Length: 607
Ligand code: M6R
Image (cartoon, rainbow, N blue to C red):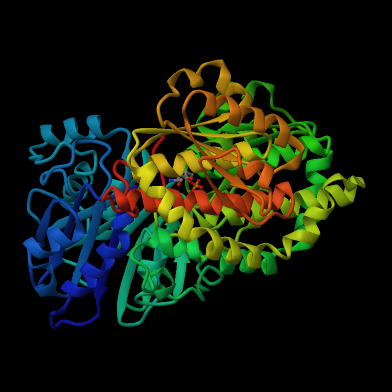
């Protein structure tokens, strides 16, 4: 959702703070682009902060308020994805107290803000926004009437219910940042000359590689050379919590590509190779055993991660394991059937998606063990699961998931391979052998398909709707292709099991309606060919992703793209790549910025 950042320097003399805040805002823009704001302590002796904020993109707000030229000793910055209160200048963060001495940036939702606001208003506080966040600086201000800043902050945090990551700047302590985390991610940097806190690791990495990833319900303060964290009123021992991060901040920059989405699509061979080489086969075998012994497997995830979950469910069924993929936010409808002996599998790139986290808690609360597949080390989902398997895709900046999906599927395939070995099922044994070839094959897919897909995307970009059809493992690929097209090109796209298309969806098909078919499994080829004929008979424009040299398939389509073929499970990875490219180029043809899809946030941290 929102992106937050704070920095405080040791120096008494004001520094060129503007470029630092701008850089942080640029990095955090993907987390929300409804509005942008900063608050700055222009000198160590100032009695209040200066706030600059407005609706618009980072570049617009930075330009309008000459953020680059700001000087100071400390500042906080925020990019907003609106929850309470429409996107407006007043609702933009940072929010300040009545005196302007306390500035707060926040990600999450304060559930009890209405009652706090009423109480504070009755005590004489003046509110200027419709946000839940604004209660926080006023609460701190209220407690500061009797307490020093740190204690006032601690008291204020104790009053909050809901989900939050908070950074506060208090004018009387210009070299200190106050922070708190519950459910929303927050990282503290450890450095000698500055104190840094941010919602995202790459933003901290601009300043230091030594970080502390905060856990739920931790809060504290940091000044240059000092970090103090508490939980439940007791200090937290940080000796083993400081980790040295090898990701450089530049790994998250565009490296010459026009958009992060395209960069990340092209990074897939590298991400897959990294995931492959990082696979811990002991953990995978233990995980396979847990799957084998499970009474029932419940796979919970959202969006793209859920599509990886569908791949897993199909593979598990093939291996005789009962598995149900569930939209994480719908876990409540199955939890009554969950008990000891069941296994939950949570798939989440960020490991912070609140729906998935809540589902993990519900499954564990009902007695199930939980296995996590996630990209972010130390994320909430990872910490709350019994078994953790990491995809090693590196940071994904684009809102649209690409390399994190293919690495999730690679991990799923590795698990299926380990399980197939354990149960002696030769049916999908070749998946493990082929896996080694996947990174190279994805490079081939990119080389072979990007040109033709770019051409094809012109026709799709001109249409209002599209269908994506597949059978078996082709269906999750179709679902992922349709989600990508909706997300970045704003074209209405639906995926169906191809056989199901006759039971209603085909009514829309006429006169050039684009229908994209995914032919990644020879077992279902015949039936799928019949579905192509049905669509042709209704004057659809048919587009096929087909194996190389399959002339009997090629002749069915108005347009087709040949995609190298390994086996259906590994083909999920190969065949989704052209669909990622199709969505990307359709968005570009339509004049949209694929990195900033409207109404979407990279990580959804509100239910
Ligand atoms: O971080 P997660 O994998 O838990 O995120 C889940 C979804 O929010 C995410 O996949 C979303 O659907 C993406 N925008 C897809 O491109």
